[in-house]
Image (cartoon, rainbow, N blue to C red; front, side):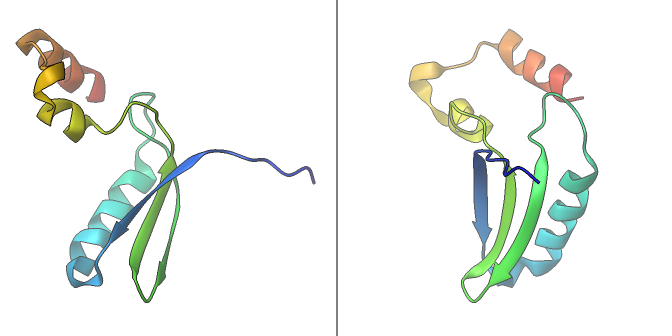
Length: 85
């Protein structure tokens, strides 16, 4: 079988929030939408739990919202919400 290489993002979370981590994994594992990153898998090690998703360039939505130099107009925020739903 040919090897497939894809770029991924890995989110590392502390084990202290395990119930929330399990909830997040369950949620993103079932989401299939063109505007939501695709869940690839997860694993754990002594450092924490790692959630693997498809890689999206440009940073996170949180970074975009917090970056004052890229301030979003109200219309953009409404569009983000609409596209996610």
